[in-house]
Image (cartoon, rainbow, N blue to C red; front, side, top):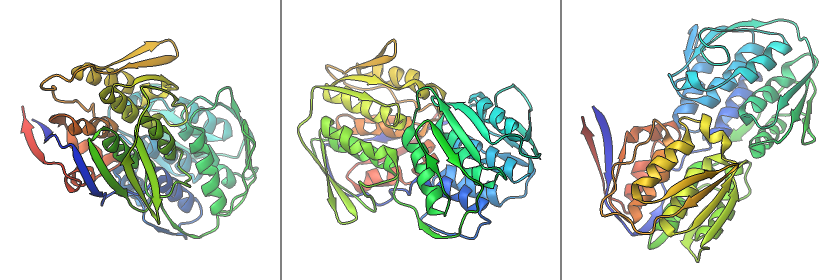
Length: 411
């Protein structure tokens, strides 16, 4: 039995988004940093996303086997944290998680002195963590084009190493804002971080306890930019969010300037309204891959030809997001065509009378990226509960801004 949600077309949107979650990226980092510092900080407004709830449970639990489900950040950060804190655990997850590579992080931790075994396939979870021996080196070289979560995981444990750590990032560096976020948060907790681009030097130190309140999540906010872009009329207020942010996905403000959305600060809120848009759109998503699905759907509906680069990391997310995007875009006449290292978004010329149900591939961002279709047509989205991974109140927020949603189940 599968579940679905039906959304009636609504062209005019207004209201304040009530359930915009706190940043998952920041929450998961400060939870690890606080644990490394002995758990003495006071953390406020932590994300209610499933990934963060899982992280809290794993950090506070005593079970010998930890199931991180589909939470990639939780898997990677915990691998490093449990290693440096010399805990003997088994880390596992969903079948999809077992297909997401972790070999580069494990290799780096082994070079530092970790004892880690693969329980099934080399290079992939589940992992058996068997403790940490003496530090064997204070220098590591890792590829810069890998998941920034590997790099952030190593950075956060670096102060706990007796000799500290110097990380050399080789080649092109992807998702750079997430590395900078990690460095900025570490500094807030009293750590000296020397970030020189391709080399990050972190001496041995002690995290200091502080009070810290987590800001709203820019990745979650991005979907409201998409609703505003596609609706005929829109006036949406986003609370507790600031354009000056640690989060790289705040670049959605600049992106949506091209795609038809004006964002105006109003105190601690942000007001989104419509504006003129361009007919062609070019963007490098290397540092903001989580925004690609959102931008693709907006371009597809508004008749904007898109030229996208930097999508490579999307193949190893919750699903192969490039393949999933193209499959679902084709249901209403759009296409995502690969031309080497660039992808061309061919928008729809005319929406069909009805669109087949949108599949989500157990991927929260597929559900939320395609939901704004409801500004132009009735839409059905399968397995809607996937949004709990990052934005549990998403469907309720759609209702509060003017949409009619009906839950259902099918065979």
